[in-house]
Image (tube, rainbow, N blue to C red):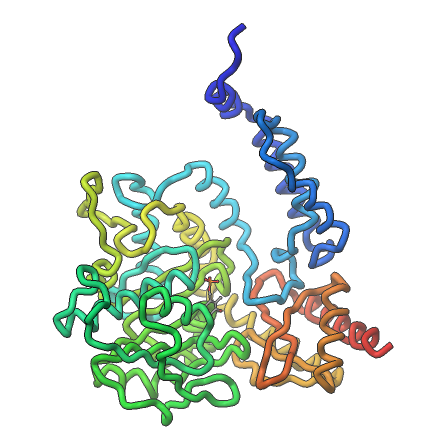
Length: 465
Ligand SMILES: *Cc1c(COP(=O)(O)O)cnc(C)c1O
């Protein structure tokens, strides 16, 4: 008998329905148990990851063994982010039907680069673009590029701004780079996210030659401390400070920037979604006057990971900054997604984004975002009642917590993280290590909040003994 080639083998697996049923069973098993397991993997589960550390074997693995190992060793070592008591970083939960849609979309294995490569993805992107611009109150005609996350979204938005400002000065960055280019001024708030600095350094704008505008005690840019703006200025604002959740005063700043001819980019990773809630929308007043925005559907909107969006008021500016040509690249008169992103080949992330938006509807999106804020306030009020210090005005979904002193905070956080009851991370806030809570998941109930408050109290008790 001739030996089976790898292609023969995979052709056989492609019709091995039991293999996919098995994967489904593992996934369902995970979903059934995730809410009740430790929120963070314990020492034993993490030690179990050693099972993955082996040299690449010579022979192909048995597919069932491989899947079984992934579930046996991988699942227990995951962070239970899809349960209700994970409050670390600013991560979101996952909308069930969006996850289900992703399963189907993953099976399609589409490439979102061009219409001709995947008409269905192009149409879903086009639909999501229109819905999001409407939901967030952005200017009609704003372009959206679907990227991995806000880091890349900011990179694309700032590239569009850089090129636009310099083109107006008669300088073509795409052709000539930045060598000998007129100088741009980059202005941002002292509370800007580290990914903005990263984007600026990649874009050749430098992260040490920026003009940093002082911020207030919530991390909001002080409008009256803004330097004079001109048409050489790239101004970066923020919707949602990563520690406090505070929003820059767009209404006080954006009209001035527009009058001066500056380009305004807004890092709205998790905060831009406030615009979807009538109740919270005032936080974003004036944000629609900016030129580009970045946002993460995988945070506040609870879309599956990786789902970031760059928005740009000037469709051509984004397309020009991201443009490339190749003999085999066929642009169409339909939507060609790659002209709005840094990538060429991409996953069809619009599948789960479309599903998320449709599953929510306008009222659902408003409720989801409003609820995160309400729950964050409940968390803060409950902790304060238990004698913890709350260090920020809880205007959105972020809460900064501290014990009586920094040493007590640090050890309380350590005990809290070990408890498996809930998980929060640390942050540096005004020269103090504090505990940062981010309420980001639809899954979190009032009971989850109350149970987590009890976990805080217990952790502090343990810290004292
Ligand atoms: C999360 C976050 C980012 C980075 O987004 P990624 O999706 O992780 O790339 C940038 N800015 C703010 C304010 C954030 O919260």
